[in-house]
Length: 87
Image 1 (tube, one colour):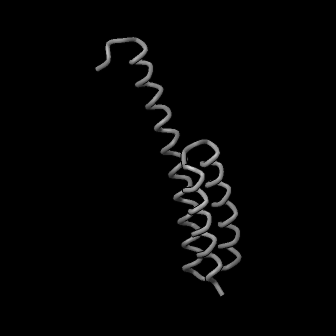
Image 2: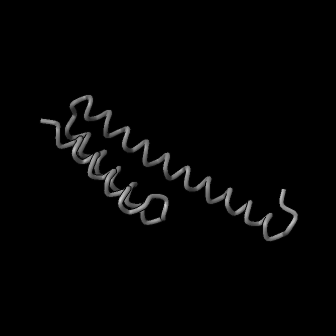
């Protein structure tokens, strides 16, 4: 356990940031799962609607530094490709 005041503060700040990052990652994963569920059901309209929210969540996460920009782009590309497979 840290004894120095600044080290104690860093521990608290890091816990706060980790919790925020975890919440944002969870939100992104949930939105991607909703898209996958809509694709599995074959509902193109619902998949398109979920896709726009998923892309928005992914881009927000990237802008906040939770995901690297390339990772965010890869996730967007994969989920978009998945929606485009619906005939």
